[in-house]
Image 1 (tube, rainbow, N blue to C red):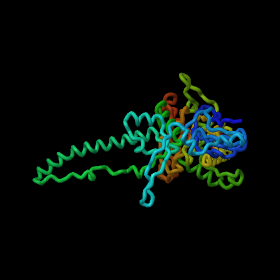
Image 2: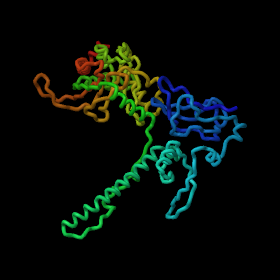
Image 3: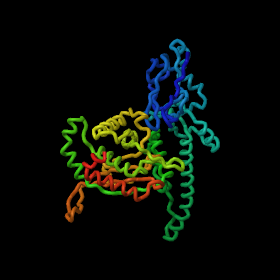
Image 4: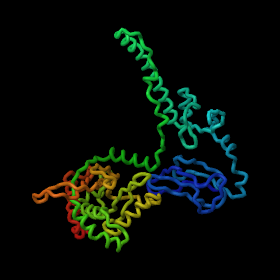
Length: 434
């Protein structure tokens, strides 16, 4: 009996995924519960497991293809039934529509030989090529599985257009060159096309397909800029008190809780206190309503190697300094090994991002929709400031609050940052606010 491998439910609001890689190949035996294929979503990666034991007889969706919930990814058959079903690679190529064999000359060690290379052409690319009378054998395939895509045809057409434009430019240069030579009393000099042709950079370019996470980041950033009235206000914070407290307590804190006392926990606690004083910054716009949230799920932006992720501290107001530091450390580890769950990433009422760990002195953070506020931390730098009439050197940090001006006014945004400044500069007051 055959069974389809289908795209499972991926979580709230997630309906699409990309086939990242197949962990099994056609003809491989699989056991029930064994992972067969890995999918990438905008939030996290998932491994789809086999629902029965047998043989993977067919892969329907190739690596790099986008799929939706419920789509069939492949087919698993009983071992006995699979014996006559698994086709050879050559036969399967001949049967698949949209695949053609293209003869290409392959040179090795100065010699050449003809080989048959299988290329798949997407329907859109094929129609575009026919419409513009383009020989597809001249188009370089960059899609998954040696696939000629619409973008490949467009790039080829742009290259051809550039050549035509250059020819026209050369023809325009010739008479001008002749006129200039005559004015100088010289014979016309030949125009060298090589001198005015641009350098061919294509061989030094690399086309890298955007991951689904990167595509989602790009889409959400543009969406935030387009749909919200984003404004940013700044302040600076004297970090002396926090740094002194950390210096005095870091050893005992780590010995007791098994984790270092970082800056994040101080800013999380300060942000929550400020949000309680200015609840609209912890709100959301839904149609003509403002939703004020009386819970504090704080997103922590983490720059993972595969792209930005924002896992969420649930009910952060109920967490201790140690719990905050431990959870953020776990999030950072999960983000690197790709084990963040959808639950880790969903929701959030306010976000904190720290560009200072990369050396950023100041920035304007972009909102994480539908949130209406994001706090940006930055690099701590010793600067001269005036304290009670004296010039002193203090470790200072610029902080930024980007906010949605539709529901947060400038006065509240400025006062919000002032509140954070006051709390960080007097960290003991965080105990009273908590």
